[in-house]
Image 1 (cartoon, rainbow, N blue to C red):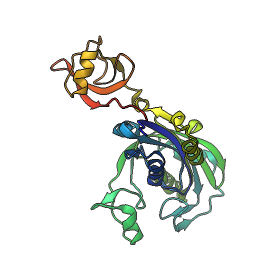
Image 2: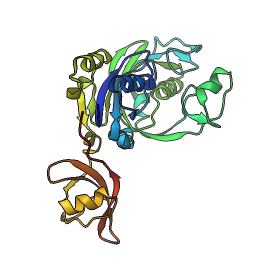
Image 3: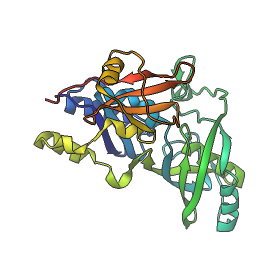
Image 4: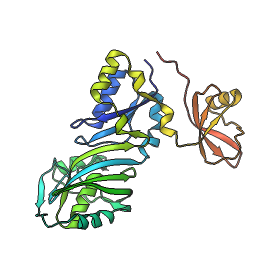
Length: 300
């Protein structure tokens, strides 16, 4: 069968993001399958999985804003920054108030420099940090600038603090939990994490693995697949005529009259509504260059 599209999956606890991709590849028999944004094995929630030609749009979903619900346990720090690690510190937090914690939480709002945890997939000399960590090696890591655009306390029951976090690509919620504990002076770790939103995809519409497996068994899988242009609906669109479509399909630049150009990158559709390409405007020459071209494929 031919599948060009996106699945909004609810990753279960204990399964890796790669494991979900492998399952989708087996069920769909589609060779090209990828995901947009890794979730830790113990985390759950929205995992967009792209199939076929849609895999060429992974970067646009990966760059999108993420929203998480993070349950943080105050007073216990671990070496992995989450509940799977060894306890490195314990502290009495009974005197902490919600107001004190709220003040510290708000200090992380905006752009912050965040150091990735040792137990992460960031690589050093081609080897993931978590492999070095398992050998007992602690390596210096470069801080990365991330944006925490919204931090909201939605649960408070000591020692547990629940936050809803809206953030940019590359944010480690485990590091946020750890850094929060450091700043409070009591230590903390991430106890539970759910990704509520990734780009245009929301947990309320996410499909469980069991439902996905049933959909492929029963033959209604196509109902669960979003069109691949869902990944780029934030970009402006244009419609191209047959001559321009032919040129674009052959990888050639095209002259398109679409009025005022409001962005450098556009979605291009044929007259019959088919998603043809992403086009980049060349202001110097006044034409549109094909950035990504999608072939017309019949579904079987």
